[in-house]
Amino acid sequence: MLRIVFGVIGGFIAWLIVWVGSEKVIGAIWPAFGVHQKAFEEAIKNGGEFTADTSALLTHIVLGSIISVIAGALSALIAGENSRAPLFVGILLLAMGVMKAVMSWQYVPIWYHVVFTAMLLPLAIVGGKMITPTN
Image (cartoon, rainbow, N blue to C red; front, top):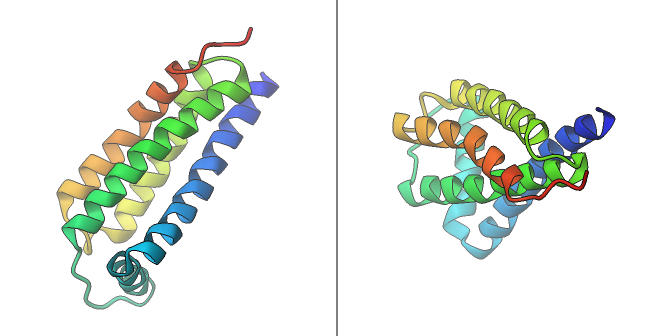
């Protein structure tokens, strides 16, 4: 049971670290993405105008997909089982995704909110299923 808890915590924290890190790396490589991210963060923090860039949103969907699979796989690897830990990681990611959607609802198109939030749980489960249990 303790390994499952560690797996969930590890998968969730890994998702956050890889997400933030990949945003920073992509922003450094692709300056327009970095500008988009800063404008979005500023709009969330202070209100005001923001126009979402479709290519940046699609980049987020691709990144979120890859990172969710990785988080699910890592949680299964740490937990030594591939069903409960990825499921709980996915539930945490879904809760975080809903919270983020609520915070940014007025700034981002609804299609993005739906796609991004809906993919978090199933892709974490898929990542977990890619790992063979060690028990």
